[in-house]
Image (cartoon, rainbow, N blue to C red):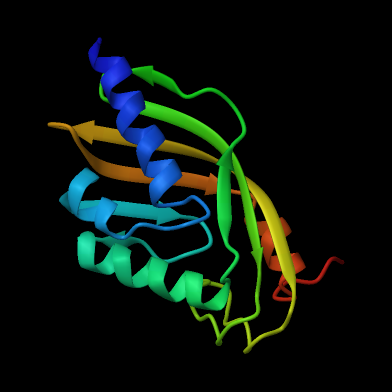
Length: 149
């Protein structure tokens, strides 16, 4: 396989095993660089494997049915892979303070569903960066953290 195909395979596994319906936190140690950067507009940047695992653990406690799925084919060029996906879940768990705009109180029962475009950089077969632009306005409105004017 070409380097681009290898990188797409890494990202495909990451989307399925980390962001998918059943999160496998062991995939972080396997596919993420030790100092990986995970950055989305809704959340503070996360650095390193332990921080990324802690973030996902809290996110999935707050949204137990959280899941993300691909919305388009992955595009790869050199060390970069771009993906589009959709995701969401229902807030039935504890308070979630992972949003930059404020905390979601305990078990609101609110559902969120949104889309994202993500750019991942691969170094030596590991994900070094995952930087995404999510539809944060939609998610924040659905969670009651932002009102439409």
